[in-house]
Length: 195
Image 1 (tube, rainbow, N blue to C red):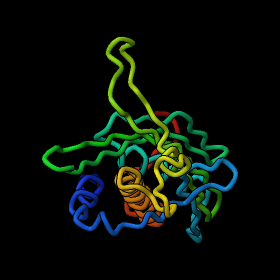
Image 2 (cartoon, rainbow, N blue to C red):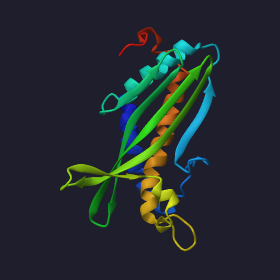
Image 3 (cartoon, helix red, strand yellow):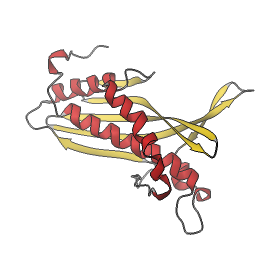
Image 4 (tube, one colour):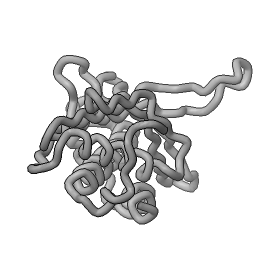
């Protein structure tokens, strides 16, 4: 699990040299117009309770080093909702710029099927000193606001940098979820609901 977290931080950093040619491949929900990594996959022969416990265990293991929480967990309905965090940085000239963003993870399971959605990405853009509250910006602005497009309609460099980290995070989380829920390697350590 620690290796997976390390990948979440290092993969984007190691690939930044390719960023100018990066073409975002972000999934946009056609109804909400928000960035949304969603999908489903089959896990034949695994009942809803076992998939639910695997999903809950994945959530706790995957985000164990971050201050992340599960906001709703319902074993009977096979649903888990939680909030995750991602980080990245890049260098602009001589200045190192860091990004921090949060996102929601929705997981629904039934016998043999897992459905998930990773959405509602919000970037922390500093803190309002006078109000003492974080300045949060929906990352959907980089997709929907025209100021993040050039005259040809392509994403600006500022939008690409943020979308790069969001896409990398969404892809890594999706892969990890599928790999973990498709495997029985942690099943002996699973416990019923009650955290």
